[in-house]
Length: 79
Image (cartoon, rainbow, N blue to C red):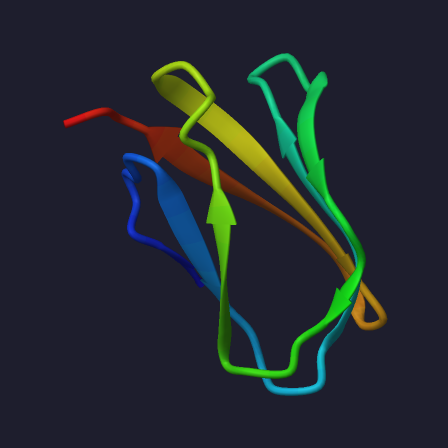
C-alpha cells in the first residue's frame, strides 16, 4: 500500500515485516526511471521516501521483492 496518494513531499509504503526489497524505482508515465532508492529490508511496517524534488504529476512505482514485481501509481501534488 502506498500513501498518502496524492503526496506532496513524501510517500510511505506499507509492506509485511521482513520483506526484502531489491529495487524501488520512481518512473515517469513513459516508463523512464526518474529516481531510485537503495536496497533495503523492510524492518518496520512502513518506510518513507522523499519525492519533494519531483514536479507535480503522475508517476509509476516499480517495486522488486523476493516475492515478485509490483507496479503502482502515485500522484505528486504540491499544496
